[in-house]
Structure formats: structure tokens, C-alpha cells
Image (cartoon, rainbow, N blue to C red; front, side, top):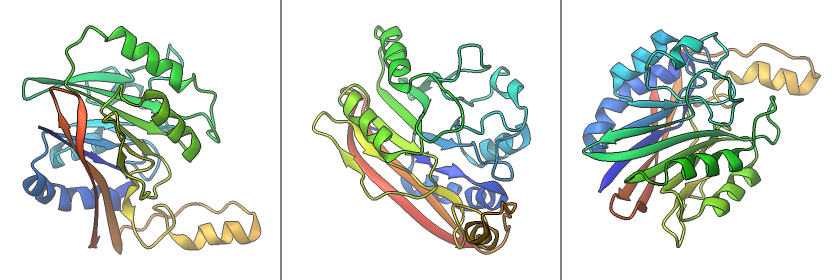
Length: 263
């Protein structure tokens, strides 16, 4: 059985602090073969850097997926210098980096795919459904033990539609972006595990990872106030543990993980 720990969007310094504190213990408890995390909010809540990626690798994360903030910090070189970092596969064709990778784990090959949704998102991305078809078709001759998709999207409907579209063709489809873990984890009759959103790793007593005061002021006044990210207080850790049969590519168990810690 392959055990894959997929960690939600890591938001800012307090998110990284939470990973540093909890992940080593969780790896001992669950013994995952592969640890994946979404890194698009890793640095001050917006984008990633070489230093923050290396910090999270040292903490025990093996591979990173991304989203609409993939290039917020002018980090194009991260995607071309053999770092274990993906950007969404349905970015335009000339965008630096890769949207998928085949990862060798315990003599097994795991395909990790990063996609981004188009509904309510700020840019005009290519169709994630068509791009997924293209990737799977191009790798049809590979002897894959598991196929994992991170669908970074705002709309619940878009993620659910993709679940129906690829049911039975992949091992797991997990959603990221909203920073709120949903309670709809499931394994379909075709063996594809699904969770609309894994949530986040970050400030718990705020609004999707940032201090609540300025966000509330923005709602009340319609004046845009800057996001403030505290580095002290309660933090939340969201992830999902997938147990996949490498002989069938089917998920046997999906387990959401929710932990809290104070700084």
C-alpha cells in the first residue's frame, strides 16, 4: 500500500512554523511514503521563494504544487532548476516549469498533476479538463502505481465536475485554494478518492489565514485594507492521508487530518 500525505495551502510564516513543528511528528505517526504540499501562499501568504521551499523540504515535504500565486515573487528559476515544484499544467504553453511529474517512490511510479480552475479566477488559463486528458493520454504507456491531482480552484462546482469527468481514471483528486477544509471526503465506486478542499496550514483565529480586523473593515467599508498576517496565536494544520493500492491505482482509504497548535 502506498501512503501519501497531501498538505493544504501553507500560508505565511506561521504556516511554515506549523509545518516545522508538527510534520516530523505526523510522519512518525502515519509513515507516509510521499509528502506533498501546496506552496502558493508559502511566503507572506503570496507566492514562494527558494529559501521557503528549502525550509519546507528540510521539514520533510517532498513535492510542492501551486496555484494562481505561482509566479508572484518572480521565481521563474525555481521551476527550471530541478526543484520539486510544479506550477499548474494548464498555464500557457510557454510558461516556465512543469505541470506534472512522475515521482519514484519505493520502486513505484506516482504521477503528480497540478491543475488550476477557471471559474472566478484572475487569469485566463487553458482548460483543465482538456489539459488533463492530454497528460493522461501522453503517459498511457507508463506503468504508474498512482495518479494524484491537485485542482487549485475557487468554485466547488468546477472541482466536482472534474471528479465526475475523471472518475476511475486517477487515484485521487484533491482541491486547494479556498483555505477551508470541506467535509465531503469520499471514494467513488471507481476507486477515485476526492475532497473538494483540503483547507490550509496557517493562522486559525483569522479569515483564511490573515488577521480578521482588516478583512472585516474591507467588508464594512468596501475600502481595500492590506492583509496582515500574525506570527503568533493559534494555528491550524489541514491535510489528507491517502492509502492507495499500487496494483490497481485505486484508493483504499482517505483520512482528513486536522491539528491545532499555539505559538
